[in-house]
Image (cartoon, rainbow, N blue to C red; front, side, top):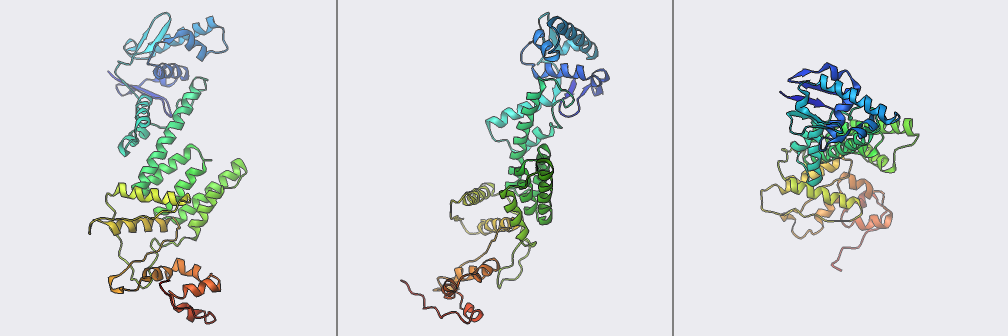
Length: 378
């Protein structure tokens, strides 16, 4: 015979699949049972329990109250002596009893999370057991730090899950968990930024911009502040981005849809790490090397697509064997990319003249430019 106890969200206790109304309908019995469950590792002194439950009562009265409440629990709980052991001084929930409890499942997963990185299946198992705050209807002082501790730990697990899904490019599923993370703390800007990036990466640029508007409204209403510079910069970056997922290459026909990128998790994470390094001002250069046909170009293309979906200017260029001695051909092609060409037009006359060495058509577009000297090895 098994009982199942749910302490996250709405308290619920079942015995062989049947709800126990006497406990499910009594907040005080729920609180006592939960206290014993959460402290099952050691026998709990009656004096300590009485103080936690009736802190303003005299000790004798508090212990009398506990004795009556514990008797009610024993009468309401089927096969109570299978689950409870007690004497005149202590009460303990028996760890060897046949029962399941969502809190204990989450505690076990959290211990594993502290020791190592959980995979997606393990994180899912952890998060599926968390249906809301610990005993939300209980206002005793003893439960508050436990409730907050679980809240923070599960938030950390959610952040890890969202990061994992983003790295796997599972943007739709990542959005679902990011929304759940945001519901934990609607004033946390990092969660809005994360959701904006995921929606943009999923091709929903308008949805990403809407997330920013929601962020701005909540911050103004609750704190009377505007979004941070970082959040506003991300919004502007996405607002300026093109709605198309791939910027057409100059003189290149429209490409067919790319096949999904399978595997390459380690390499993809390496590219994302390099990008984060560059964002911190640490310039870097990434080379993707390997045998022909193993997916180097496809991996690089995935990074370009991801960048464009984030509103980042991304350009493509390459060297062709037939171009031979045209050493600057890839750079000339890069300068003609739409996102770069617009900026070239904003250069002053001296710089524009230098660029005209690689792009002679600039002399036609700007007839007043002086003719640049030929490029030399020196």
